Length: 373
Image 1 (cartoon, helix red, strand yellow):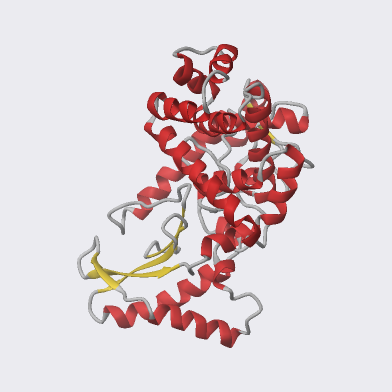
Image 2: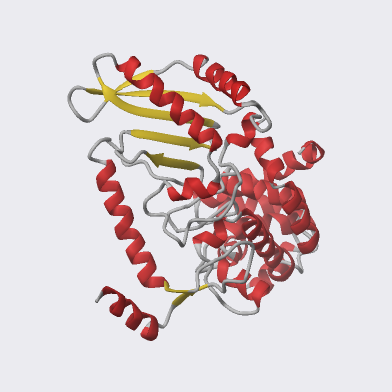
């Protein structure tokens, strides 16, 4: 009966979630009704959260800068916090002899996180169905700890050292007679740069193809996801450069494939697809929407702000209304500092103001260290 209903929905739904199998790096999904898909996904996530809340005070889920996964019994939680550059292992154990109970579990979880690739990571989260799971051997976080090429004994020693240098914190658990033991392991000092280096080849390729500076691509990735390959916002936006399937994704799809399609999470979690899509969108903003702005720095500011909030809000901030040509004419009579200051003062959302500051600062930073990546 359920299959019959879905088939009817496929036939009569005006909005379908489509991605041709042969398109892009890796495979997408053939035909899924987008509205039905998002509804079912929300229901699945709610069920997942309810199970988590049986054991934890708060149902922590993945975000744009955090990967979170739980054990099958929901008593072990692993968090990779890319923004704050640390791995956190939390285990719920009996209060009596809690360190004895937790030591082995913490060790096992640290080893697992450092060896886990993206395919395995996506399979470990119940609501990440076939539309999310990607066939990739890219490591989630282990690549920044220099374990590649180590013998099992060498890896073991490094992991033991990491754990021994971190002090466990004991917290109150939800159920009587239990405690939470948390261990936090910081990223190496140059961890984020090591993560950036993983995408160097693709960034160079797309920068050349779409005539966007490599430093700006890195700055956007850093600000959008902190190099979390499974970044997901509440919008939802997906992947390294946080592409929204229903908005920027449609614009990009039409430019890449010649037709409007909705990218699946599976498609956008593939780093090559995502960097192509994000850089393509930067090209659209920089050369099409704001291509007539004479000052390249002013044009960059407008591109950055639009990537976050849309060209219409940039026009409102500069002009007080939406008229792109009038906005460009006005900008061409201003200095780049005047454009920046006006955007910071008049953009409608605090998030976009902070985003403009962050991406611009990181763009300058990556220009300085680009040769070291």
